[in-house]
Length: 284
Image (cartoon, rainbow, N blue to C red; front, side, top):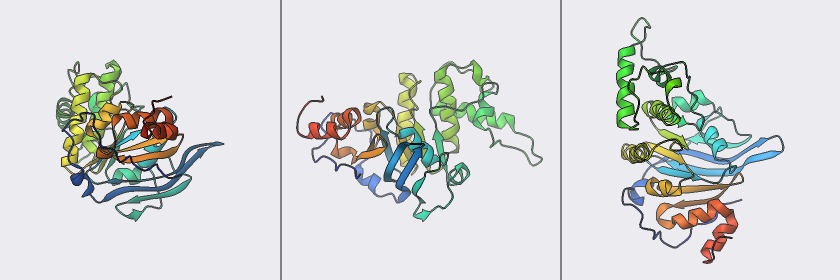
């Protein structure tokens, strides 16, 4: 099923001017291309012939209601889940084997809904787990890693209550743990940062800091995929929006060609909601 064509009506909801221009986003080369991605769990098809492209230096919003297939798609992009059908291309090169090692090698970092932190380890050890900084004889440079961890937490996600990178993750609140997961991903990202509901446990100040950081990454040529239920956050920073519905992509539209109202209709009621919105009818 192909995605519904974008509406011709301009966005007219007083959108912020923070986002870069559409022309800038279009200049990036194709970074990640997914073509015909299908995934089944038993009799359930969770991804159904999904295709789209992420360009270099582009911020893409991945939207949809619960059960739309967003998290499975995130895991597929990250190399954690292997699709049953479809192609995965990186900078135009078709990759035969897709796993976490391959995507990590290409600079893909992901913040999953499940932050996958170890409560009994410190913030620093969680950030650098498996990628520790060591000296020539293999001993960890704890002081150096602590300095980097503190700098990331202060500059990217301004979260209160974290007094030291030596704190155990198990002693942190949900929002603080989310900040640690974000810090880990943003430190190691090089090409693509994927964020699955990153602001769900963050306070307003930390949320704004993270959204602004995505715009900074764009200026540096790093792409981002933002999965969120907050359509206003997505519209604030994303160049393009992809809406999923029951495992299918139903909308792939640039920011200047849509509105929060249209995105809401697509997320809440799927293809029928889009049709009603474009006919000027209220949601059912």
